[in-house]
Length: 254
Length: 215
Image (cartoon, rainbow over all chains, first blue to last red; front, side, top):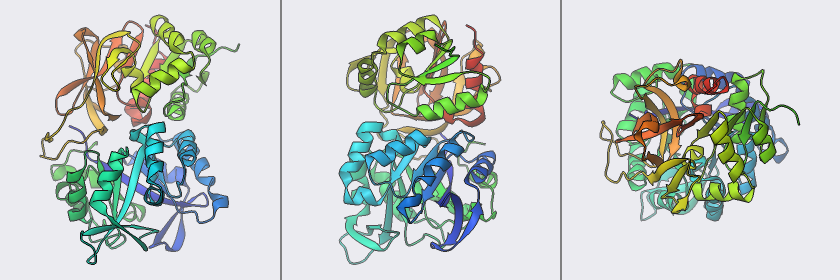
């Protein structure tokens, strides 16, 4: 049976992996290749790199990182952050990324998602959706951009369907209410989107313990779970997470 | 022209870098070249035929680059590894865009039809079939499966699968939820639906078997 995936996520800036709480007090967490290898050894099913580089001057650094990681780690690599044009997708894929995640640009220029999938195939285009629960709209969850600061007026479930219609091969859904809280994924949001689309859903935002990973799959209907801090800070290894999931009757790759 | 041990066919589609890096990793003493030059493909000892995206675009790009014949020639004469769309293109026909393939295997490429289907745990099955799934090897041993356990997991990403007419060519199967053919072999050709270049140790073992394969 197809295994549910565990995806450690790394924030990268200026060529280094960094850790921080809500983008504040960023601390150097080490060399991307070393960290990627460690997660690979622990049995990670894929890796995601989020480029949080603020200045355009340093943007190309992520390409070198992906090249280095891709020549030593042979599992799927996803890169997101600052992907604005089809040419950005091309450069990341050429560097060795297998999938590219598109977030803010998808909102402001949905055609870019269509153009990228037409050019490179749906299998490598992930649309990242940052959603928040709202009470001032005729729907429950609204799409936000800029790290959860800017509302878009878009219904997250309808938006997910639209992105899949334009060719997105996978959705990365982050609950901005939960991100950094360690109280678990927003399983209601994930379930609503997962049931509405045919493509796989990666749940993100809020993991604090291993039961949250199980709930994300069983209650939220996610096909993969993404987590950063529980792995970065050594609270749990990926192996431990998989053993826990298996003990709760979830199919995993061991 | 310098000696090329392994040529990776470049027709502008797919994760060629991932493929060539994984091969270089298992064959550091060999010359690996990503190429769209038919002469270099003709001159190589081993040929890898990757592919990603949609098969109609892949066929179109292959023809546009004048590589159609070089690929058929390689598949008929030397150790040849098809990956993903590079497997699907070896068949007669695909439902994707209703197009003709290279016709090295008789059969059709079909789309997963999974509406209302669920896995053993009751979760909805998604398309593309994406992630790590078991590969069931057939009973007859094949050198390309050397040192790879039966039911080993490999990384898949696809919405279409091959349905060969000649069942004897099927050497590997996946289940999603029905059994489908995920590896075919015939003489010097071995082709897989999954991505060995992204399948960690098992995938590297398969690539290592390929670079040392003397069919």
